Image (cartoon, rainbow, N blue to C red; front, top):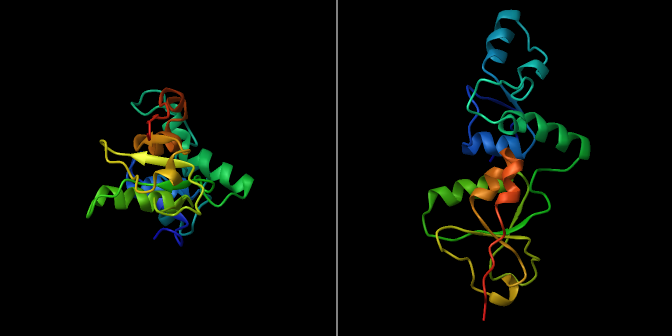
Amino acid sequence: KYRNCTHLIAKKLCRSEKFSAACAAGKWILTKEYIINSAESGRWLDETTYEWGYEIEKDTHYSPQMQSAPKRWREELTCSSAPGAFHRWKVVLPVKEGDKRMASIRRVLQAGRATICSSQNEECTITHIFINNKIFPMQNKKCLSEAPYYPLQYIGDYLFEVSKLKNISKISFSLS
C-alpha cells in the first residue's frame, strides 16, 4: 500500500499507521513547513532541514528518540541498503476476524518489509510471535514453540522508543 510513497508530510509526530509505515520504510517524513516554503519558493526545497528529527526540541512531551525516529530510520535504511526496518522479521500475528487494528499493524509490518507468516506454515522460521490480550496465534505448536512472544506494543517501541525495548521482555509460555 505504501510502496510507491517517497515522502510523508506530517503536522505532528505520532504513531499513526501512515507515520509508522513511512518510518518503517525509511521514507522522508517532513513538517508541513516544507510544503509551505516550497510553494513560496516556487520549487521543491531540499528536504533535510524540514525532516522530523532534524532538530530535537527540549520543551515537548515527545522523547528525543521519538523525535529522531523518522530521520534515524531513513538514514539507517539508506546506509545499510536494508529494504525496511523489519526486513529480517518473520512474524505471526494474532488473528481475529475483521480486526481493523490488526490489519493496520499488518500494513505497517509489510511497509517495513516483515514477512507475515501463517501459524500453520512449518517452512517459515518464525522470529516474532505477537500476542494481543491473550489471543494467541498458535495453531501449530511445533512451528511456534521456539519463537519468542512479544506484546504488540513492541512494534511501535522498536520504531520510536528504542530505550523502552529493554523493559519489554519476551513472554514465555509452556506449550506442554
